[in-house]
Amino acid sequence: MPTLIPQATRIQAAGNKPKLIDEYIGRVNTKTTTASVAHMRSPAGWIEPGQTPEFDEFTVVLKGTLRVEHKSGSIELHAGQAVIAHAGEWVRYSTPNDGGAEYIALCLPAFSMDTVHRDS
Image: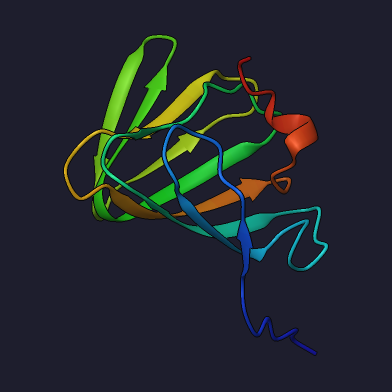
């Protein structure tokens, strides 16, 4: 039988400004370790520490612009675009433009503070 997830759990975000993370599926809300799905809303000027996660992260931008820095440069994603950050690759997410960004992130396996490996 399918499992209804009646609501998300708000998660504390890393970065220089407040960002809203609502986890629908993952280690916190559903105790799921195989995948996580979260709805992100970050303000203009938000930037998080770089990271080298042990999971793949699939991101779909719904509104605004999301910047994804990587070792060779950066990618700017706009509404309707997506990116895959592969496990073991260094990345840093930010929303440099007015209006910030709204996006969905899917991590395989699920996001974990123990496996995200953020820069100090």
